[in-house]
Length: 263
Image 1 (cartoon, rainbow, N blue to C red):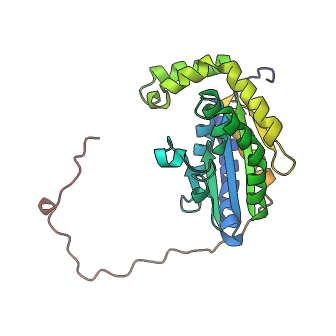
Image 2: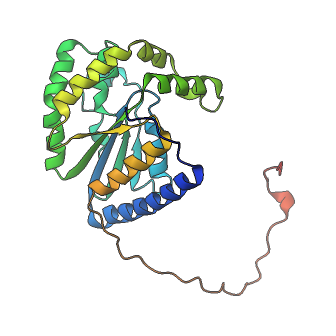
């Protein structure tokens, strides 16, 4: 990990984030107009900050164009499928961006460490994954992979915050405790995953994520740098005067149900 630096001031962070989010809107419009297909995979340790980055990317974007894919536990039927099969329906059509909050790489991480897959299944996944991703790239998909790296000390800090904060408690699960106890097993699994899938055609981009603000800015800026988007001409609008009223009368308030004004 890099040496600890002084925390970015909130005003500076928000200013830089806003500029990047303006560029993300331009990227969105370019994808829409050109029919590009973009997949961005976000992987990393539990509590590494993947969700926060995805939230900031999608914050001002059109959910019909930029979709977040965060799949839950596979069904019994999905467990019997080809491993990549449950992810294929979520891939983008022309003019779409898909942000995967975890992905098929569960096979090389949690499913491997927790014993949900056999060693033979993991070996086959690592062998076939680059072939699968090359197929996506040849089909015209721009595939970008981010790995968010966080230290054990910072992870513990964030876990404690999740446990003690009622608004974040849903983020913490018994699986997080198990993964915490298997820190070294996850490290080894990640190293072997990188060795097999960090290819010239589709490299992993590692984000130092102990500093959330810097991680968000760095990953968004790099995402924008990886895609050769251009600002598209936008239609201009003028708001004309409203047409004159034609005598419409609103029904009495007593005939409708209103939300109580508690605030």
